[in-house]
Image 1 (cartoon, rainbow, N blue to C red):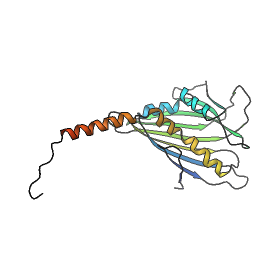
Image 2: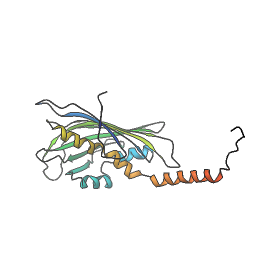
Image 3: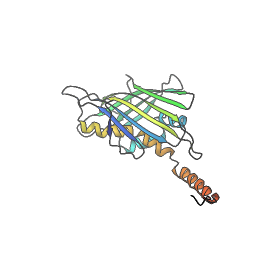
Image 4: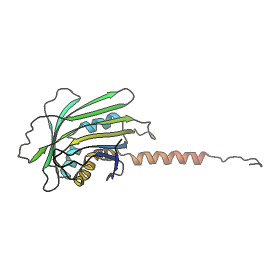
Length: 221
């Protein structure tokens, strides 16, 4: 309840936002939700989401102009990691720093979660970066679907709560939330198998048409 459709810049991702404009002196708080279908297994999609600093995601972050993105070396368990990033904000608004611990969990039936929450840890970026520490928490959910013409496919959902720390104009929130939720579009692009699925679909239809002998109708029909 309270979700409003958010104009999505991503062709494969549906986005929603639950946001209440802050009064004077209050902080900017809201929750975004994104859903998509990804052409890979839930396990592989979850692994991609968990690899916060993969070469591909580092490249995308640099192209978008964000000042920093890194993984802290300290690890408690194999299914857990701590990552940090500094997100670029519009002129006259300080950039925002996010430091989060993430953990993944799988269940029978092809379901995988990747949960994350901000932690209070100091990060050395190697150079001074002007940024205000923000808070976020959320969860990715991936569930395997029936294979499409031999290609794996899963349902993906990301729900992310944010506290940007400060009174941020609504237009900034509306512009920044889609850039956070578009991580699912990046996953769609990474695993896209349109040609494989479409080719198999065409071949199946071709086989059906060439083997069809026509139907016999009675005079009454």
